[in-house]
Image (cartoon, rainbow, N blue to C red; front, side):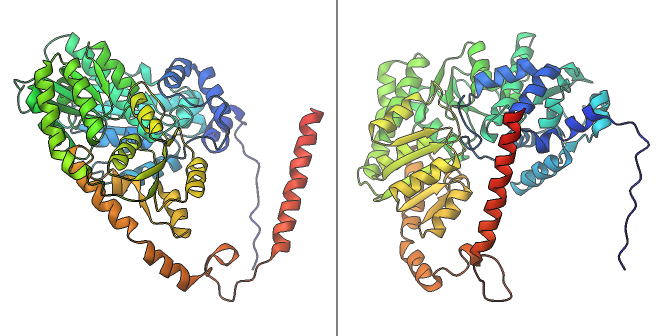
Length: 517
């Protein structure tokens, strides 16, 4: 029996401002969100993000990277820190997705959440709820640091995390805004939190003695490493640095607060991932020189060790010794040019340029390297090197640009993000997911070259399997026949034509209304 649910008028007075703010994250575009945030007092934050993580000023809605929610980067950094509580303030759907993704990638800590509705957002009650939550979490017996992250809606509404106390019961309090309309990628959002923590740690150092590294302070000058890396890479880098009397320092983002002090105590900071702009600013404020690129391949290793040695004030004889030892180990493998074939490469981790360099030195015919991250002073040399080899380099690459490169260059292997890999396989092109299959292995030194050669050769050897599957399945499950059917799929072009006609009619109506207004 059909039942009609009666609709009664609400007894509460309307609150259009609250409704607009509460729906902002789901329905508003970037321009509306930015305008709302600046009107709400977030101009300084957004202007700094625009300088640190620049976008293309003339970019259209699709001319930008398609990354996961940027806030995941900051959340990941917080969840990997010992004795650190990480709390989100944002729409429930966003918090659910971020929490799911975090645990999918192995987070072993809970994610805090401060919920809100239109009323609490507009009246300021949300900030009071955040302050109460932070006070409740600031238990020095359990945590050393509490991190609170504003997502899109609280940022656009001007929730003032800067008014939170910097310390409660000896527990550090760090509040950051990480809106999708201000931080382009999750990779750069890692820098938002890493930079904020480095700034806090540097101010602590300036005010007096701080905790030493857990293993004690070493007797060698160190090189701090900027950017998440495979665990073996810092060890490999340390071995390369040893002949110069240098040691590999902490990797930023760190796993423990006291490692931030040790990182700032370095002689040189190495921007392995070149988009850590806020972190670079803190190292420079501490008087530390910053060197870009990384020790990948023969030329990359030679240049990087030279630059690191000069920045650290090492004698040229020691620099030459370190270069000769590192290059001797790699020369035998790379001179064989073990990779043969055309490759397109894209990703959003920030190490795409380094992987492209190493592939070329291994013999690959790399035609395209796309990165969701921006061009910075710390990757300028890598960009120039790749372009000199005839590679098309696209920074702030969009999915459409990555796919167009694959269609144009018709590679024998496509390395990229999930949608690139999916479409490549649909076209019978062997492919590798950059994040899980390239980033999750060594990249530096001879170990990096050997590991990359192994996975690339294995993938390129799968072409015969793709051809056999394509021949067997044909076009089954493709186009109009995609999905699960109870009968034989039948294409209905007249339905598509009618839908297109209605859409065209609607667009014409909207255009006429705009011209009339």
